[in-house]
Image 1 (cartoon, helix red, strand yellow):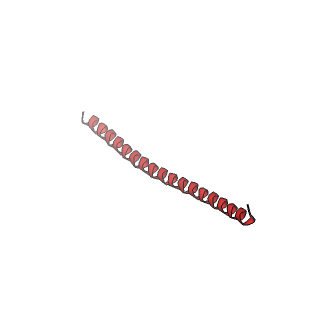
Image 2: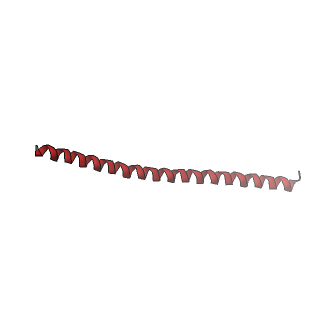
Image 3: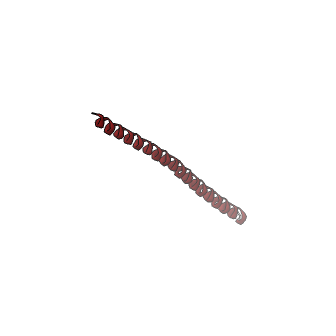
Length: 67
């Protein structure tokens, strides 16, 4: 291989390494965003369940006062 071909191959390999690293970082960021969306959903549902439990406990207390 000539010197220029060797340099070109090195530049190509470096380019491919950079692209692979960028792709990996992009994928990690997407996974983190998906996890954040999942966590937000879990927190909303958790709050909803807590409200339902509070309502049920309140109704149980109100019901026992009537007796």
